[in-house]
Length: 179
Length: 274
Image 1: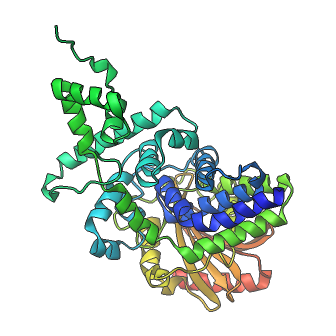
Image 2: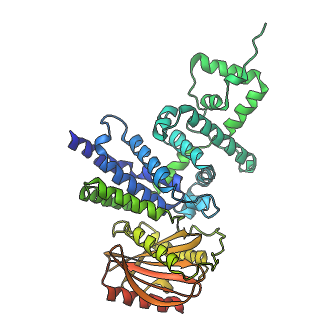
Image 3: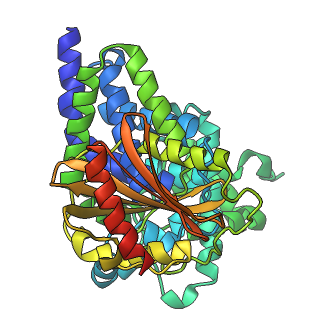
């Protein structure tokens, strides 16, 4: 049984890698740190595979590990984001020129989300991008459901104000949970 | 008598739930009525709704750009690490190394990402050339070097083409003109350009593979110091050659014979001083 669980985690990690990398990139804001964070997450998950409950969502378990490592072991060690050194526009887009050519709107959205405080952009990623329910995102982050909703409200408010200063961009398409 | 809507029952969090479409039935209808009847609530609702974006579509673009081959290599390395170190002690040491390395980290993978950076080099001079600082950055780079392997230094699509721009960005970060040519010597294949800060000083790590299999790094830290000739030391199982100019500290680090590393360091120093 223990071996089975390890196999589930080991094989499941492969399909989760791109989404782990995306989450790590949203948190850390740069590619080198994102890869380091993914590696630490993989090591931790493999070592603690017996703690994974078969039948539950592996991706959410991995998200939780990744988030925990970032907050408790990496970010806390004076990884100082927000000091003006990491350019939001380029830090999230792997190939900026190509991105600009293929989808200017997507690039703009990435830039706007990356300008949000870490807690807000993390909530946006988990709920609006990954499609987790509020309670599921709350479980991943170990916070109350209301905190997730408040963070989403704060994120929406900031984005709305960005929108107000950028109305010349024209109407935006809606997706996800927009009613 | 008409019942007045109670705004306290429709917080911003509740409005987000409404906008997100997760409220159902009577609860949704009640919130809809309040939004309709209360201008202040309606204003908040409209504002929060205005914060909608095509999040998923935008971030799926990012997903398509994930460095698949490198991530596979990272997972392979993690599996080896996990199976080779069944004892918790080794894992904890590994994570401690990682955390220690991260303590200097304010990294930008410099694939041209620093075009907009405006950051003057740290030029305090208050501790320039003193041993503790010197030992500190040598040690912490040695810790971080442990994380590199041929797999984690593999090149993704298009990365090699971006290296000249990355090296130039690293030079601007340090306040020192760098080109791909000035940091390239025989036997070393540049793979990554990473930018950090250590004790408020810009620090750049140029990571190479030697003969396609041995990770070797050239690290440069900004900060005024006394010029010193190259010296060799051993830290964390690595051979290190380090020297200082009046403006920068340099080190070359790798798990390779001392004489071979010294030869590489001499070649790099010649290039960097011209």
